[in-house]
Image (tube, rainbow, N blue to C red; front, top):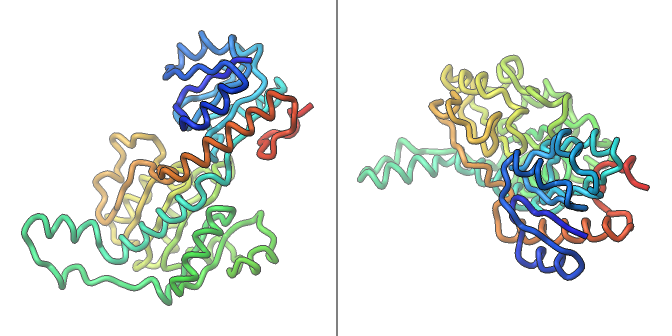
Length: 314
């Protein structure tokens, strides 16, 4: 069978796929993908390639779409299910990498590391200006506490933080086992010193944190988003930062990527990174290995473990 990889994949994963199938690696734009997709039984993407209804409509031979990562919002899963095309992902690949980045952003915001670095390189010695705060003893509020949120909680607890979470889908006993309590969204926003977003992007979470929600946060609180940009309303966040309604924010994801023209680019006390959550050697290697395994199983007629749309199976 033929496999198309459009956004790149680790060499070891490509080799594993080529041991059993014909594999093409090509950086295709939307038009080129539409022209090529009919020749393939499998398609592997990251976040750049959009697997739309139109693409799936042209993919008469397609059996499986693999997302080398966690989120599948760039894939029309509903259409894939209707066409009996399996969608698989690698949900465990980047959990540690994203969690470490989130903690890094918290430390940066609390200790002004990026600002202090710039100041030093300008020849200044502004020790008093960059007096920071400790994470120890502060309350971390997780908006979503699945695999990544749980990894963040584990690290935050090691720092001596109290952890609470807003997650309507997590059983209370699972939260208790992980060492944190479930609370309502409003209470979390009011109590948290650090709000860290780790929810999946769904119709319910788009725009979840807007002007009203941000107004509930402490003036000394900071917000970190390493999940999906659409969950936080960037315009409202930029306004809250300019008004001093919250103390700072760190974003790794944006409503539009790259975020050209976004008001967050000029907002004060905002630390920004270019969607680096899964960008570690270890995470990429894990994602490649997992998605190659999942696609190979799907092409062999076996049921993949990380099947996003089980209704399409069989």
